[in-house]
Length: 610
Image 1: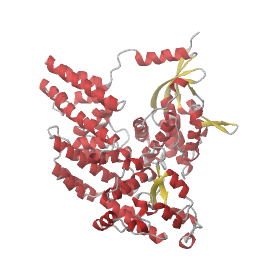
Image 2: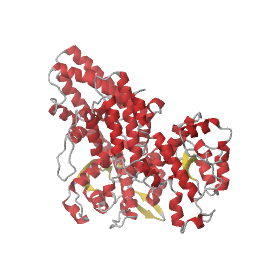
Image 3: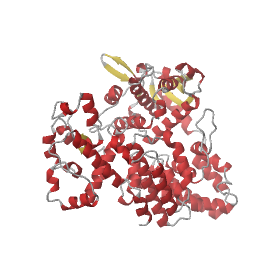
Image 4: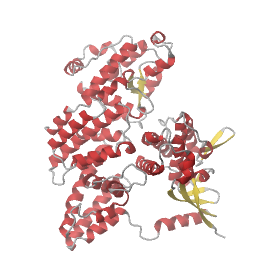
């Protein structure tokens, strides 16, 4: 007899079991966007309840967060829910790693992540090909995916790195044990269990296929079209809407709704929820969840009154801004020198750039003005990110949402000249500057950005010296032999003069990670050189990229384009037969000067008047 049960279940209980995934649905395919949404939902919901000084016991009075239904067979085969369970496994692993070095109380969640028998770890979702990756992430947050062929494993690793980057600093310290307690006791699923796999699939089909399930995009379209009185115009608007939505969905799964959220926030959102407990959602948040309702309620703000207004809204505004958004997504995914800053911002995972760029556009701007605004605003965003990163400031959503919202309103529909003035004033008024490079070094936070920065510098130097350089080659981690960060000093305190220059090995290791002591090299070279002393390394560098070659004396002979570039830009390049502490500091100063050329506010004027 068929038996179906449904129960509310918390993470603490759910993850005490081990689950299998059928062979035909084994791929874990969440992208960064889904992780970003999950992290934002969970952390913002938690911060609605958390107050400084709260303890784990206070979680009992916190609200719960519903993560939807999961469908299982009685023998724990997952029919629906593996994407969410896999993602929460990654979150639990990250939280466990985070609390290893925390001075605050620790919560034992090992049993929710894995069970162990005969020295073998079995994780919550028991798929053999994932075990090595999850074990590496659990042990030290690392796993080498260079030669990995499994789509699921590569995605698991990348989504873990996304969690590392996106997790807000405000929860990493005193609030951490409280957050962990909330995750395991207040995140709720509905567990639906059946006696057979066939019944489980029937339930899945019933839940997903029965009835008319309109998306917010479809409901918004229905409302807008219903207000157009002319049948011919309505049909024309409907055809345009369908064509654009199809294109947006081809770009990414939820591309249509992502575009509409960015567009409405960029052009119309006038308020945002305060960062206080029990604060009400405002324009910014409502657009993010039910934008179809928001447009109805705010139609006077958007100037939607008569039929012609609704016609204009689809046939002009929707068309113009979807055109721009599609262009931006193309520039984000494929390097185009003319729009390189859009690509650079996307490479660092800064998805908020679409909203900021769209905010600057006026629907009546000419094609030339729109192009200049894309270049100008993306250039500003590139500099904003760089300055924050060089000063160890995060650019994750939760940390800068108010900054981005206020910036969006400040540049909304401004002219080119106004934007130049705003951006120059903004950069000069930031608490931080590129002088933060003096103390910049490689650590867990900057590792996410360091390859990008060193690749930008290498590409900049080579490009200005007439070398056919490729930034995308330097940052592409999926190629067969990707580039890695190279330490100029080998990881050996006993080499050279290190023991006379540093009192302890710890001091040496810290100094070795400084910005001026880093390069990029192909992974195979990086590994073969890692134990080599500098005097031998520097001869090898002479056959590598130009930034590495500048350490070798040969670079300064018979190289007129480089020498001219060095002179024109007044950059203090010099070769080093040896490379001691003072030399590394000199190199750090050189890097700062290179960066000041790459991230230079004078570029705003150049773009505006090009």
